[in-house]
Length: 380
Image (cartoon, rainbow, N blue to C red; front, side, top):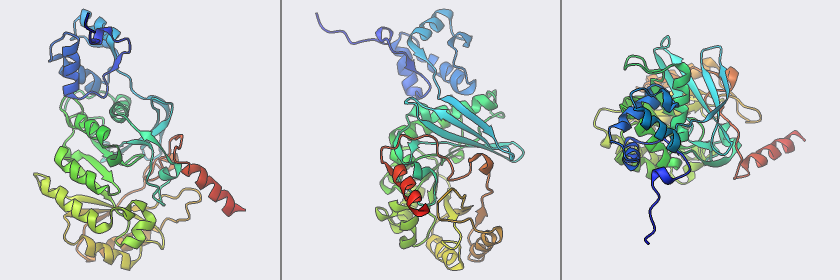
């Protein structure tokens, strides 16, 4: 007798529907003998209403709800901690499948009309940028699509369900949390597609931003697969200094990175700008010569510059420049015909500011242990 392929109904482990794309959701319902249109109903319950209880999904028949309870689940990450800053920023520490912790941050602006969620893509980060506390935790693994979109799901459920297009608890998403998104490409892109899907979070492609330290081949691939906003974590305009700050620069230097940005923009259907992220570090990259180098480098690239005052963390060896120095740097760029804004530091009282997300990482790289050892040697 030929071996039978297991069906969804004969599989003992329930399937988590949270991270499924529209196509995957349709395939799931067809596999359990249901009509394809059930996929859009389910996605709206999950992503618009934040619902994880099949019994509460009242536009589904009772037999279907009972079937789903046997075969499937909607399982988001567990909330270990939720904190609110004095400035309204909110941070969640979330427990993912293997017991590791990641962090996600919601930043309100414009009197609450805009709520930007900073989403993590990895448990830890493998890049070890010298000015980033997250990188000092080392790296464990990539997050799944369900664990990435689950951060949006948790934040939206906390703020309130989306009832219509005018009520979006999360209005913008930036892939700027823990990790390098382009090193987790196969999970990040499906998650971003859910953010854009009308049955998901219905966000505009201009309101979903991926930030990268410069994984050049994957920038090219990204331009072929999805049309979202792109931010470049640059921080220096010459290779010697950028390699010190961002070790990935040894593999993909500044010229390669800027060329990849031009190629990415050529694939966008509209007049898009690249966001250049530049962390200002006292006496390292905040002098007039650095502003002039940056302006020259970016003269031919359609872009806007986001200046980020360094957020201190213990034993980094770096200091935050004064407010006046940040404003001088901004003015130097203005004088050289470049648009530059200074990012307001948000959530630093709950360690939610840029570069401060650390989570709990079972470090496979042993980098965190080496970092602690170096601190102890310096102290001695």
